[in-house]
Length: 335
Image 1 (cartoon, rainbow, N blue to C red):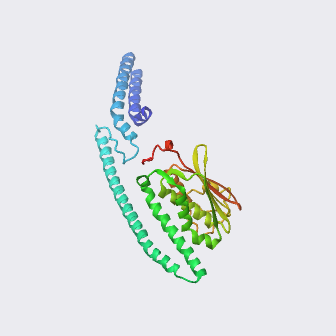
Image 2: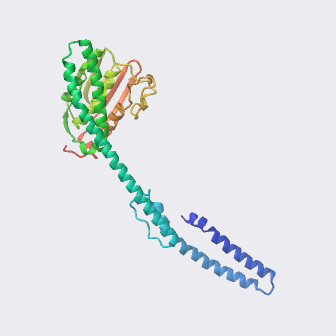
Image 3: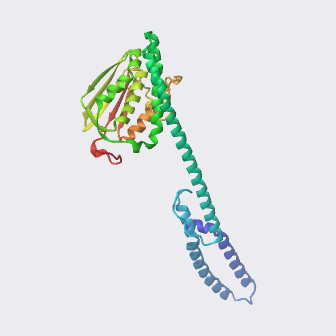
């Protein structure tokens, strides 16, 4: 701040230096003016001027230091009381802009909340005709047509479910309830929901649950498993998907392994990025690039470590490592 103050007041300092240089030069030219007296006067005035700069530094930089400490215009940190007319102008302008920005932020937040509520309401309303469609599909005798309609119905259902949870993720901390959760009913329910799709693609499941209880939120865990299973089914054909739970290094783990097309090594670091789709099958219009991204976000909130291993052409393995009771330091819930 001292350097900035000197640069700001360099015109004062240059003016003082020029005036005293002129005075010394005149005393040098005019023999009637004692050079020693002028030099002594210049020395005393220099001392006074230095003290003047020190006092002005502390008075003038107090306000600007408080301004510099504010991280942004919306920060609630109070500015130092302005002492000069210019400081008052700056302070009033900043306060006015801050109030305007806060109002704009409040309006935008309200608008986004309204849009979110409307979208959630629309999703719930769409589920009613979807349920009716499922009942109608169940009455169709043509098995090939029924299978195709069930597949398309399931795609719509999964996309709506993905959007529903995506909107809820903004307040996921308020929705979590951490408890000992049984894996078997969750996994079996998700497999049942994908049954028509799996039959259509000739996919089976091999479930081996050595560990059945984990510490997590059952509803959000089901969402993660749904994304991983639907991803595995989507990219597999006539092969089993293996689900296995076990203990390793004191942590419970759930492994979901498919024998599908796999993931290219160059894509692995990016598969959890928002909107990323495979570079291998980039023309696949059915891929949204949101499923694994959302699964990773939910896993982070549940403190679940989500790891992936894959070989192109051989399949992909996702491993969920669940936290133990002592690992929960940020999630509120009845443990």
